[in-house]
Length: 392
Image (tube, rainbow, N blue to C red; front, top):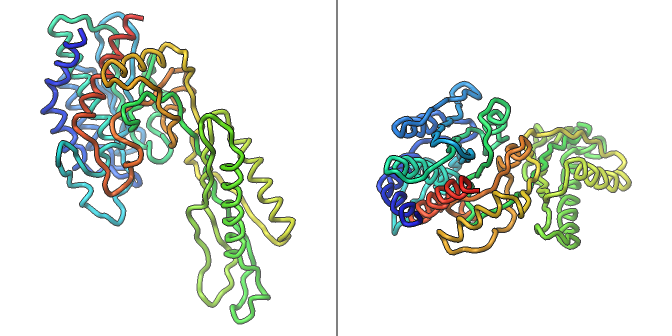
């Protein structure tokens, strides 16, 4: 059966290359959210395989695409990948013009997350061909192409509320083909600093909100250093940074308003309430030195709780076996550094792992790429997982 799986995926080689090139060329930047073309491309491919396809319109022009392949009695496995990408930024449309070179495909979304999506499409196609050839393929395979992951995870949150849910799930983020059992979470807040305006000819008459933001930013940096020095977690150290600042109206006016956006990465086991308390201590320290500091805290709505799957669970043990047989890599990867939609699936009671082609180190960069060989290997691991879960 192992050779049959390999041959079935290898038979998808031309489709894999065509799919990754086509999908990268589709602009699905988020924000603003342009996932519709990608969703319909995936939906058309799934319909051609005989899947039952549904478009969940989460927002106008921004659907999830859900394809279901029922192979008979057995567990259900969801392959979940997001259809949006981060914006191309100053690099412009060049990143939307995929480049194939030395077996690698370069372009926006190559590994985050269109590579994972393409590997999942190849898995579906290979499973259908194996079933038609009389092989023992059982269970239900669900491919979920979800919108909005790069911001709030709105697509997967919608899916967990409206279905379908599955017995198991794999989120296809770039893990260098290592099974990953958890991810760090994110706490993202906007700190609005309130000052007092005055004519810039006499700054002492005002209270400069930009200075207050600067004080907070420096204290955030010190907070980050303390965490790195004291963390003893097996999941690495948490991190915090101040990354967006905005304030002031004119150069001749002492700024009475300034805002600072802060990102705090949480380890499995940490909660938003715990981080709230940490930041309160930071502000208390500053208030003791600068009693005029006046702030207001608001949630950016972009946070994701950390998640972790039990290493002894059926899914964790089975994907490790599946990956080892295909890639020869016999270890579990480190906790994923970024937040993923795993957190929403786990909260809905669906055991979930993270596994996909490419490296998170290349995601969001101007040199983002994925290798065609890794797309094949990822598809083979997904297919092997489906077969092994049916035997549990």
